[in-house]
Length: 126
Image 1: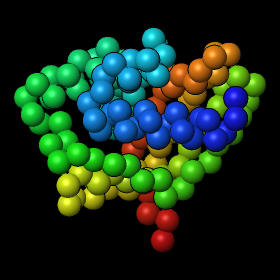
Image 2: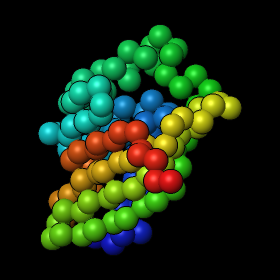
Image 3: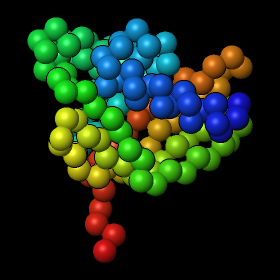
Image 4: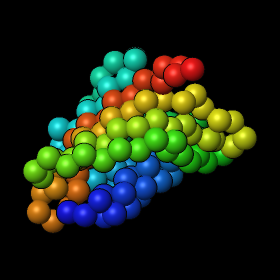
């Protein structure tokens, strides 16, 4: 249950997201996984269905994508870990807005599972 292991699982999870690897996402995301954004809440099934649909239509990050963390904090509490920070995505030549995020991860004794992700536009700290 080391932080370095969690960091690698996170990187692989985000890479799978941009690569439209729904099989990998389904393995890493807990059955009750939820994404919360300014647009609302999305379940694991609705997220994976939306990615699959966008993949079929060719509209899912057509030039690929990557995420970059500009701030990252990992806090352990028993078998549960909260990852918070700020970051942005790049797709093709386009950088997305800076967002503040929070992820909840559980260690099930054999693997890390992401339980929730929430993100919203980061407030201006200046």
